[in-house]
Structures are given as C-alpha cells and as structure tokens.
Image (cartoon, rainbow, N blue to C red; front, side, top):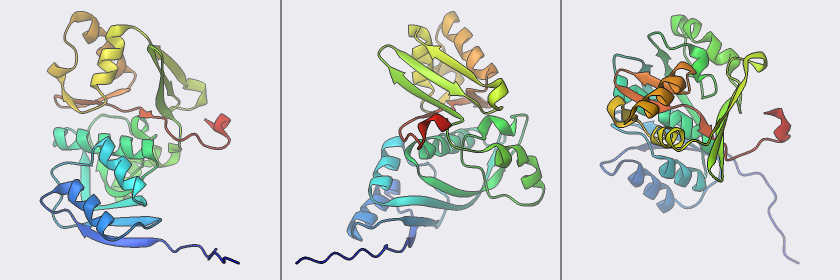
Length: 234
C-alpha cells in the first residue's frame, strides 16, 4: 500500500536580489531551487528599472510565487510619471494573475484614490495612510476588469460602488485599437492617431479607465482570468 504525506507544506520565504538579467534571472533562480509552493518573494538590492511583464508574472505564479514584497518606497504621481505608470501596470497585471504585491508608497497629485482601489493598495502609514483611505476601504477583487469575446471587449467598473457602477462594451475598431494600445504603458502621442481615437481616449481618461501621469498613460482595468466562487459576487 502506498502512503501519501498529506501534511500542508509551509510557506517559503525567499530573499532574492535582481541580477543583471532582471526578472528572467530571478525566475531562473527559482527553477534552480526546485519547484515549491506558496513562495513569498522578498526583493533585495537596488530598485529595478523595470517591472515584470505580464508573461513574466505568469511564469512567477507558475513557479509557486504567491506574493512579491517590494521594499522600496513607491511614490505614484507626476514627479516620476514613467516609473509610476509602469508600476501601476505591474499592480494591474499582478492582480490579473492572482499575485499579491506587498508594497509601501503613496499617491500624489489629483488622481482620486478610488481610481486605483481595484488594485493592491500600499501598506502606508501616517499621512500617506490618510490620503489613501479610500483605496484601502474600497479595495476588493473584481471592481474593475475586462474580458473579451469575438470582436468585442466588455469592461465592468464598480470602483465607486454599486450605485455608480458601469459596464462598457467596446466593439468599434477604433475603440478596440485604443484599448489594446493601453495594455502597456505608452506616451500620449503613441496611443491616439486620429480624431476618433483621440475622442475615445478622452472618454477613457474621463472615466478613469486610462490613467495618465505626465505624458505617460496606461489602461487600469485588469484582465479577468480567475473567477471567484461564487462568481456572482462580482
């Protein structure tokens, strides 16, 4: 008779620096260490110049990573627009893949905190915590996401609550092009090429579905990949 060890494996905390190969090197280090479950990854060393792509996040999750701890203070806003937009993109794609991000920082400028309350909020303290109270209090899974069908994209947005929730169906070719362009950070001039695309981008910005810092933009709804149980909760 074959016996199986049914004991729950304890979570693993790994302290790993980012080497010159960046996130690819980090994934390779995880592979070399053998497959593990429930890996809490604590980053070390200097802050990276870039954050893992959607595909790199998918690989981290496949290697057992459930949480990434970011030790550097992140200030999202107009002072560092490119870095801020890229970090928001990382938070968005991490949420899509079910990867938790433990980070510290704040949100500056005029962007309302509720515009990001569908993403992982920072573990901030003091004045920063007060500034981001709406983000913490309003955060839950499924507030602002998208899914696609044949020839259309459906966006659900309930960041401001059930009473002000909205659903958007994008099926116009221009709208689909703009939405697809915003899946990665881009400069303003790279997104809307004609008058119709500029009109669509203006609507997305007005609805806070496209976040802009300086000349940099990114779409903030995440792709729904993991439906909660019960799925009617979102």
